[in-house]
Amino acid sequence: MPTTLFRYQAQPFTFIGLKGLSETQMAEHYALYEGYVKNTNLLNEKLGELRETVDAAKPAPEFSELQRHLGFEQNGMVLHELFFGNLKADGGSVPSGSKLARAIEADFGAVATWEREFRAILDMRGVGWAILYQDPTSRRLSNHWITLHDEGHIAGYRPILVVDAWEHAWTVDYKPTERAKYVAAVMGNIGWSAAESRMM
Ligand SMILES: [Fe+2]
Image (tube, rainbow, N blue to C red; front, side, top):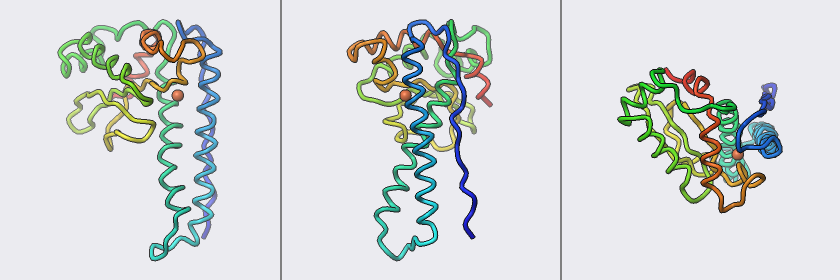
């Protein structure tokens, strides 16, 4: 029996007062996010239509490509929600003594060491994401590079801090060659309490 199609809705975010990231830049970025929501819904709709006819014994290239592409679009949607959700005006550094700061110190030796590594990941060439993950089993934190939206995730790990490293994240405010300026700006606008709230 066909089921009712679940439709994702774009979540509301405000981007007022971010230093080094203009409201125009963030509005453009939000519009791209809305595209991921729209495309995730569209793919689910198309896959739903094919569900009644798909047969493992028969080649189904359209089904295969749509299914593969879902990971890109849906991760694009979710990662932007996590990124926008951990932005905050005048975020400063991770508060010393906080649960997140203590966990970072335990796994990286010092907050400065962790941040140097995280920024180095954001500075890597190519488009993708820097994500601080927590292993739900050991509770250990680790930094990861995610290529595009869907390659490099550790299954089951909890994303604690998510930062966009696609050029569209800064090219309204900065030149494509000014990635370092974006990295400095975005790391000054982290909502540490939002990030910490994602920890186990
Ligand atoms: Fe983005």
